[in-house]
Length: 503
Image 1 (cartoon, rainbow, N blue to C red):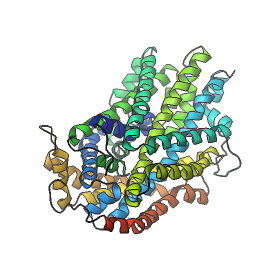
Image 2: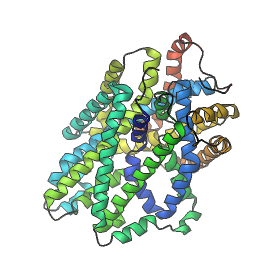
Image 3: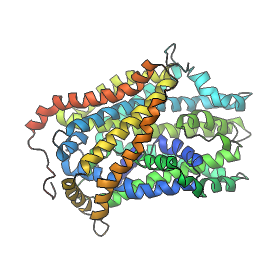
Image 4: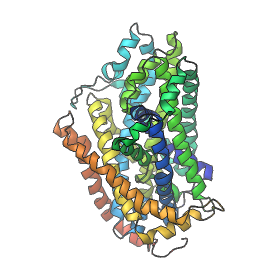
């Protein structure tokens, strides 16, 4: 593949941008609050080291060794595995549409936070302001109107995503300098402001002091370990695609440690910002494990109470939501790149044309998130596209990766150019081949049992925005595999992992 990141720094920034998303900024702090602060953090950090880092290394190494995205990587591991790779790409396209819609929501709040802060009864209306006054959501999944502001913001998001995608690896890593560093700077400012509240010490104790009695509950382990896999954007095709862009000479293992450390740092930083701010505003009881509630109900209520001056509150709020929208956009770009990369390689389409057509078509589809059905669409799609589908795809990937003959070549690829900082072979094999699939299967069982409890939405909405996406991703995997198989044969023999060594 001709495209390459210009440096290891560009690769790390792009990968951090893919990993660090709304889940880190919004959902992670809520999970900490729900599961005893420090206890959740301890399990998460242990899972990050023992499970997340080895699997992250495996995906990056696989991409660089095969020099292709998820379809080529899965095919190199297992005959017929390209179908799984294409299914991962298809689900990433659905996720990109979801993230673009969410980015449009967040960007619209950057404009609406000023009138909210200047309202006479801002504190009372803040929790329901976005869904009631901006989105006019019906809560029943039925389209009866569209928000002009949200639709314009979603369109602007897709224009920005196109500009990032058409330039390839260079544009993606360049954009990440803003989409990663600006939100980090904003969360740092909010955290520093939170430290000046009288009860900031109480907030930090609530966040970092472990409640070991919580560790006896299986739910905390399921939530913390699940967050490890999802926060690193594993099994969605991103890291193999970025690994293919990683130049020879760059060491994978140290780079993966930087990515994982940055992912954990942003999660903890966002938690400090949320805890200190909400404790300082007397809203500590409102912390929620739902990122949607945190972003559009809890944070608005806190922002209008930050200062006595509504202009100051509005300014901070606008900067905060603009920063948050950058995180959502970068995640969307990464998800779409996971699919564009193999399509461009297999089809021969120009990158600019492929990016333009994709963004135009998907931009129209994402307008559902500007309608009165948007709240139902986002909740259902986030649950299925961004959780259940990824969970199944991650289990299947781990089962394919964990075959014994696949592991030695991966370790060799990881440790090329690594010097003294090397991935140990035996722990890597145990983690990727045994622990990751076992933990994911244990995680999946109770989560899929929850599907027997119906959501408060019509069955057609659950299928259209939820279960139907899993079927569509599987169908797309088979269809894309059939469509591009002749291109793969024309390009010669795939890289095989039956023999060790470099490419």
